Length: 590
Image 1 (cartoon, rainbow, N blue to C red):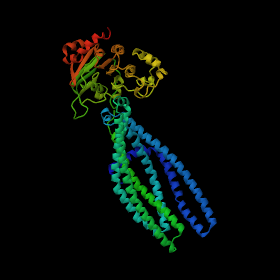
Image 2: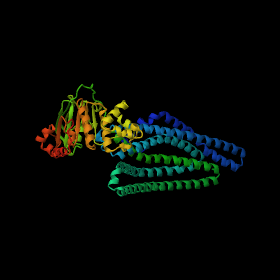
Image 3: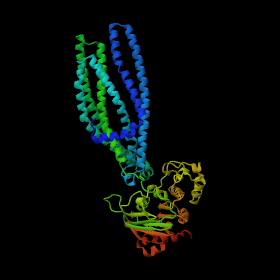
């Protein structure tokens, strides 16, 4: 195989990890192939003998040969069926084992690494690339034995029947080798282009199907159709390149094969006329030499296929080589109370980008309701993501009870800090199962009670299956407000000492928002609640409000204090407070 040392090492690693683990399947397949190949290679010899017995008029021998030929053919077909079954089972199990590990790797990627990939790209690597490599690996292992047996047996019979005729191989082998050697580079380049195209193609489909409502709202159907047609045209262009390359290679190989076959026919005629060869032996020779040529072609074909497999392997290893959220840090016993201290935090999403947070300090030393406000892009949501270790700070320290985040495991942090993001996440499952993502042991009555408190229970009970109703992909059966309420229910039922809520009341009406904020105030008596919001009605009753500006805390204090002392806060909320008072909206608790 014409692969670099690094490519060989990668293949060896993959084979040892995912293919050699199925030794029992491989041994069985190899055994079946070995026996089947040996037996099947007797058939051409018997066929030639049958022709000669017809020519000689030896009917007794012919009948014996026919019976032997029949049972050998039946036996090899049965072996082939068993081999096919075992091969497909092995391929399925081994490829799925590889996919399970790759899937686990993907969902545990650090957020900064995960964001490098488009969804379609990950799906393509998970499904297409792993299947291709495992199939190739099993095919390679089994084909090598098949090829070796065929070559040995074919060479034996070819040399036994006629050494002069066997000279055709001297022309065939080097010519075919040279064709493959020069073509493999182009096949690899084409494979890389097709994989990159596939990633973009699947990502486009994912975007379209995930944003169907937006496409309809902005009347983008025709535009999406045009883009889809562009993808089809690009795919067709790649197909034409593949056909062109394949046809050229096939044409050259066909010419080599035809020249070799014509040479065999001519030389066979000469040998038959000289009495050195029979017609039956000529037929047998042709069959064996074709088997030899076919086996040699298989070797070169594997080399061509290997070029695409190397591309797939590199794509998988790139994902496998990314940093994961691996827990090697210390877990601590749950303390009686929690404090949160953020000192001199600086962060940017990419090294070359401007900092989103600049030397930011926040201190929360007791339970209570704390709010974070600021204009769009000031770093509020980024700060929330840092608090659950989705990203690591570039500089500075985040500490829980005086222990730096760098010494705490992901498990510890996320067990005791609940983060509810702006974008709700739901699976295509029942309401109760989506809530139980927080805790599988949650009792149904506790879930119903919390749903009552947020004003969701009455709606759920109008559904045909109640809490057992399936809510569709991404919670599509629910309104945006209902999804926010259900997100709140799920979060609060975790019972963690620290909560971070990012814009969770944005889609709630006035009454629903007030009900939710009453619950938040109640929970703030036993937990630290950090609330990110642009709505004054959600933050007005906070124990402390942090004002973000230019990636840092510009001021902090109560609503009244900030209205008097913070110019930024006044710009954000003074007019909103007037509007709220005109509507008769009261702060929580009044």
